[in-house]
Image (cartoon, protein in one colour):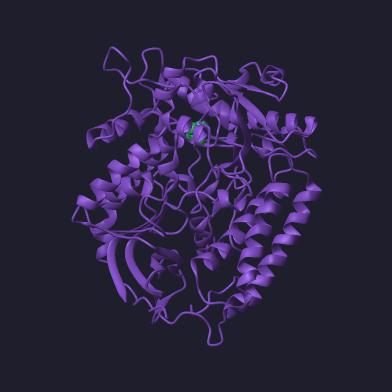
Length: 551
Ligand code: SIN
């Protein structure tokens, strides 16, 4: 089956939905998402959206905090753009119906505080901000006749028309151009070709590359992997952000204790009740995220304890249950009453600061391929994202991309194009069998442990080199066995995750200094001017890739 649209949006979080709603004014939009449309990283965002709205705040202060957090690698023009146009994008969300919390007694927004912010500037809907945003955006997209949503559809690869492609003697394309994607309908068990004038990747991050993560299961780095295979440039993948405080409990999977809890006065303490952040940074518990995560890592390693604790018991119980109803309920269900008990927490992989390299309108290095949100590297986050800047970034870049695409759509529609080859709908190799399925589960687990132990918060050259050897071994195994295994989303995600893990390691090995989230004990200091640039990776002509069965 062939589907034709003006815009193919991959992912249904804040970036994909915001772009879709704007792009639908100029053309037809397909949103493909590999699970339920609500199953996105956005939906799990607790803290909120950083935005200059307070009386005591200013664009300059938000810019300064973002640059300081980014530790020398932010692109100042991008920081300016996001901070200064942010309030306009927030107003659009409010007009669509997102109900952010207001201050008691007046109609101004109740602005929270998170690590590294010098002012209160976090808009929030209690501690479920992402859910409130996602619900409103999905409802608007469903009501739009120009938007079709395909759930349980997983993108396998992009359709790239290469620069060299010619009709007779005439080169049709001056640059590699994205023409659509091959998409696996997971429920129907078939592969479909989606042709589009523009493809927009909004696939989120790759937290599942790590054993412990705050991310939902969908965060397998698919967008990064398919963009890399297509030949796009990726950057700064060494900067994996570990959130300092994920709930530590055997029955709690991926549950975050928002930084907003520290913004309301919570302190990090050890098992003996000793507060320790004053030993690490003058901002103590509200220091930048990389500093707090490393401090906890050090405390745990020195003490041998399994976790540290977050203590907010000094705040009024009624305030806590109203401000953090989700965290309160979840912890209580596990026997932790946050109004009375310190909360056991550990750091966990949370956010990928690098991604598909884009310009200020979200365009990648491949014509007609855009990337927005966590899968993109726009230059806003540098070496360490400032808390709650990501939803803001997604909205600003979705807007910029939609404006640019609408302007260019007519010229794209009028191009003379070579026919797109149909993807074979048959799935799996002739002799595919389930007998090697154990390999999927084993390698998933292996990669996540490997990344946690060797490519985590604190790195060494030796561990990184070992990790690279192991991951390449896994890729070889996959290459050999994949054609013998029936196509499934687990298999595709494993392939993508293995590639993204390798890219993270390569970027980390390249950076011979410590900066922001990348800390290497063999190079513990910040390097000189030479390191003040992005780490860019791109597929080399010689690189071989795993081929999906049936594709
Ligand atoms: C949180 O609520 O702590 C997460 C906010 C963020 O990662 O931006």
